[in-house]
Image (cartoon, rainbow, N blue to C red):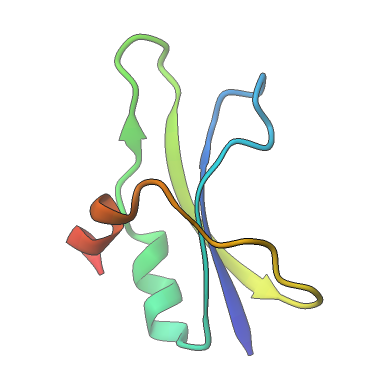
Length: 74
């Protein structure tokens, strides 16, 4: 099974604002990814949340905008 790791902006005005996307076959890594704390924006109340989900089909491009933050926790 392949997992898609996603971090996205919670501001509904930008539904496609993906800050991190990667793929893994490791269930353990996917579980750790979901435990990364939300990055909170102080000015708007929005932030970046981290989720993992099962992936099927064609892969989308890798995005590593918040890679350093992810590396601290995984």
